Length: 430
Image 1 (spheres, rainbow, N blue to C red):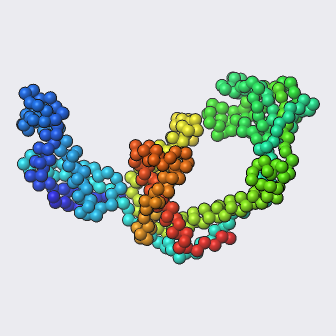
Image 2: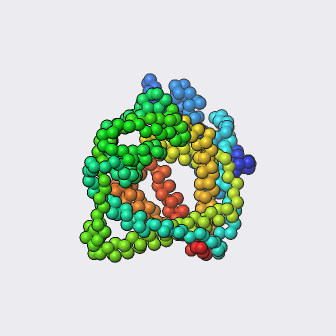
Image 3: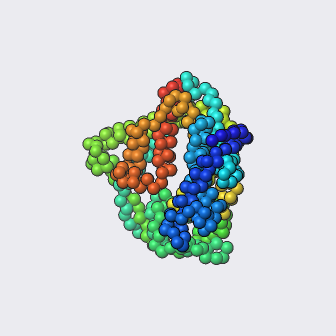
């Protein structure tokens, strides 16, 4: 086999391949024999008809196509090995000349991994702004625990308060038309934690039991149903029941009820420990991110558009799956955000992801960072815990989607490179 290599723009090489006539004939004969096993030829058992009879029944072009389908993976593999190519996509045939008795000539194109030139990535000093725990975080955490243990009591002798839970009927209209799915009977709403249209819950405050009244609101411009986005609406309402929350007393008994604590002081110490750990985790994450961004910005790489487009296609599929899990359709997303806006955003994210991945792989190569069996096993165990499936069952399920194994391996490599960068640079948290 002889090859001629020509470098093209966008990290593509054109490869002219000459296969000796003898080998080309062997490919052809093997393909004819293979195909004859699946064709009924009168007077011959399957796989026993001579080549000329097989050609008459199937045709030379079909046999040549089968021969190339079988031989090309081995041919490309040899070319890649001989030239030490680092391909990032499946090679494809541009043209070929296949005449029996003559050399087989193939012209193919292979897309190569872009060359990454690392800038400074070790022994740097980077300042990162430290996370500041909100002053009311401790009290909010404590109040949240009390809220979770709150009970409700029905009240009948007063109007609604902003902290109440109300049970009410409502029916909505917009521009004179009844809103589809915009009505309910005996709907329960926590007025202090409402996810209704802005201004809706506020107008349910200071209302007596049994009163029928109307409230006026405007749907947000970004509302998912385009027909209602930015439109005024009127809701006819009636309060059927008012409930007030009763918080438990903050004492040792409460502390013992919500966790392994003996006293309120133990509970408070645990909350503070959690907040301290949260700050530590956020500072570490922000530090790792700052170092990595600095390293990526220091690196230079000329990424071909095809790599970005393939990554954008992958992100698009992930986006559609996420929409489906949230109960939305692709058409709804396009209608709300616009096709060009979505695709431009995905392509920007794709470009960042591709460059990040290339830089990570380059550092791993330079520093001889590899993913061991134990590293991969740890990622599998992590996945098993997440989905509450034993590791053996998880492996069996993932065997049907081999791409997931590659993704897990890449995640493990990303974490090891991130750890290396953190250990080999100085981070000052301001």
